[in-house]
Image 1 (tube, rainbow, N blue to C red):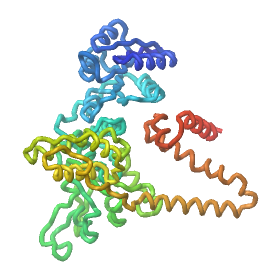
Image 2 (image 1 turned 180 degrees about the vertical axis):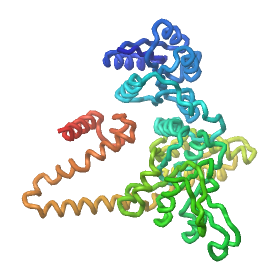
Image 3 (image 1 turned 60 degrees about the horizontal axis):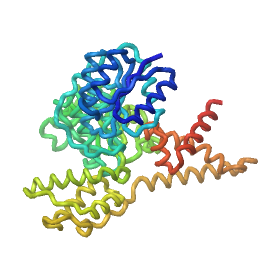
Image 4 (image 1 turned 45 degrees about the horizontal axis):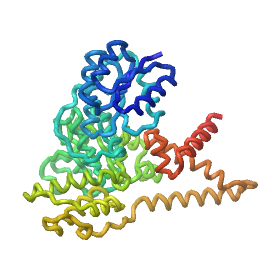
Length: 470
């Protein structure tokens, strides 16, 4: 039986977590401030601490340092409803075992507690103390969706794992990559962005791997490639799905052995860099189609970060608008204009197919027309219509696969009964599990994205999992 210390000034949170702890067969102590928590820890040492960031008096991040001095390596689970990227990174730097964003499902807290209590005696990993405190690119927002992105950045930045960032065009994939680099141990090294879609196919290999003098017509002198220039830092592959097949083979060897073979050379060059890749496409589907090597796919995708589109985090639009307008006004040397309430409502109601980039452009357009006055809805440009993108292609591929499956099944003797139900049993489990996983195990968030009631989702998940166990 373990003893858990819960520190939060919200009584409902303390009550719910206490009941969870007691239901697991443990004991719980509750404190509404850091100062009260220190006294509780003195009277009975906790085996784990659940700690809110915003507390009256000393804040949770400062309290972590005191708990470390007082209790040693006791695991601390940070919870917050107001986190930003710096909060998430500071929590990880100070040795937080887990970082939960309110509101969270109790089953998510339960899993975090069970993992914390299963730990042997431990000290904070050495890399947690090595994260440099440097300015990072601004990632704006306080919604639950973007806070999950902050949490994943904070967790993966201090490691050397390959990271794959996925999201629609304009969501800020390069900003995420730059933040990971700046919070890593490689932050003093170069950050080298590469967009292969913008490179000439005939010169892409030379641009990446470099070349020796005389390697081809026009190669009057040797030149370092981008992979070599990234030595000691981070290489960011934007739109990684566009890497030509021939280059994929050479790139895999670089990632496996850290050796670069410049064009025209027989002597490899060593280069040590971290890889962050990004795309708006589904890279796994590219593997299925045969357009992307499976071995390179698994080498690149060690850790995933999915950036939600702006339409799924409308709560951040007000904060983003203020940030962009502050920047525009500072550059122009004028006061930031007022955004009329009806304008903000119009901004929050748009679909934003171009995401944060489109919002920025719309505000700059409006600022020009407002001419120093309040920004009104008529100053905004028309919404950008959705582009024909890979989403439509994926839907067409899925429809073709279903037609092929149905045609095959109908040709089999006595196989056409309950065809609709059997198709649901094939496609529904991976859909539900994928959305639940992307929602960090939170049934309420997953149910919203699926358009289901939370109880219905839980019933279906339990049913399919039980069928798999049989």
